[in-house]
Amino acid sequence: MDALVKTYQRLLQDTEMTYLRYLHGKIRWNNRLIGIVGARGTGKTTLLLQHIKQNFPERDKALYASLDNVWFATHTLSELAEQFYNFGGTHLFLDEVHRYNGWAVEIKNIYDSYPKMHIVFTGSSLLEIYKQKADLSRRAVLHHLPGLSFREFLLFENKLDFEAISLNDILKNHQNIAAKICEKVKILPEFHNYLSYGYYPFYKEGTEDYHFKVQSVINLILDNDLPAVENIEYVTTQKIKKLLVIIANLTPYTPNITRLSNDIESNRKSTLIYLSFLHKAALLQMLSCPQKNMGAMSKPEKIYLENSNLLYALSETANIGNVRETFFANQLSANYALNTAEQGDFKVEDKFIFEIGGKSKTYEQIKNIENSYIASDDLEIGFGNKIPLWLFGFLY
Image (cartoon, rainbow, N blue to C red; front, side):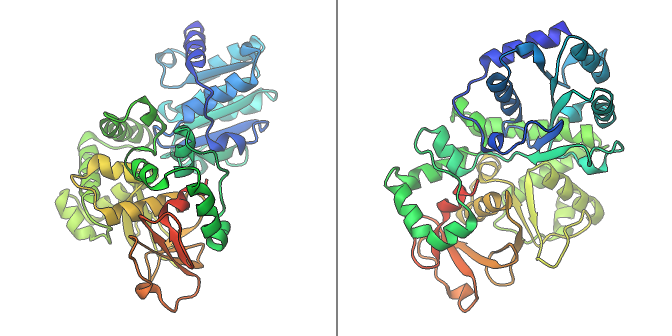
């Protein structure tokens, strides 16, 4: 345990407190069992360490441990909990739980055996916590941490500190909201920077190698995280990588599963499963029509990469139409129900229709449709039902 404590203390000392993600203020930290899931690189580890640094002046009351640490090769999570509790510990923060076999059962046992122990765990977005053999669903309060919103990116860049804005407020009052924001910052250059490199917080380490680092994160997800959760072989991983790159180099895409299957030398059933893996891993977004439930064996109506930074990292030439739609889908899906639309590009909350385009985009495709809007790129301030695309980056 000494080795874990030393690692924890070193990480805590190096943790900066300048910026806290929006989710930190939304979590009820007094709950006894909290789960935070999300893709690699979105800041889950930093969130835990910042919370400890901010709230535990008595450092021995809290302990952070990553379950992929070599210490767990010869020790169990239950051993750690017992030792920590005997030394007076009260709050256990467990990172990368998906890398530890049987994590759910042991966390359940710790939760039941130590009634005064508080546990916060993080894991890959691949985890399906409600399918675990241990019944964590009635014990754990689960949160999802996406990457940075455009609003958070501006905060991280010391450009602007605005509260998140609801979708209804944007639809009703976008002109006044955009005008106030544009008084304080040249918004379009910042927005185009964000589309390329602002989604993952580690962009602060430097933007020159950022896309290479994004590729490395993708490899870690598919080479390490996915096999830790799903029983797949190396050859399957390679097919999944190829599938991801193929999709990255297509324009906004209604999938032809037969063609995709041929391209990766697979069959239809396996290809649909691979798409489902990529969706769970927060590398793809798959959308269906509102009346259709999206299951593992269902063909999606549209496929996008999960965020625009992935497009710039994986595609030879990022298609601007794809970038725009990917951004909109990414930011809206964090908090709102998002589907394809019969007319227009997206249907939100089964009510609002959105067409995505450039500054000159017209209403032609959505004219005479109630509750329809244009989300327009290269536009600082909108008018009527034409709303700047960047403003949808202020939703969280």
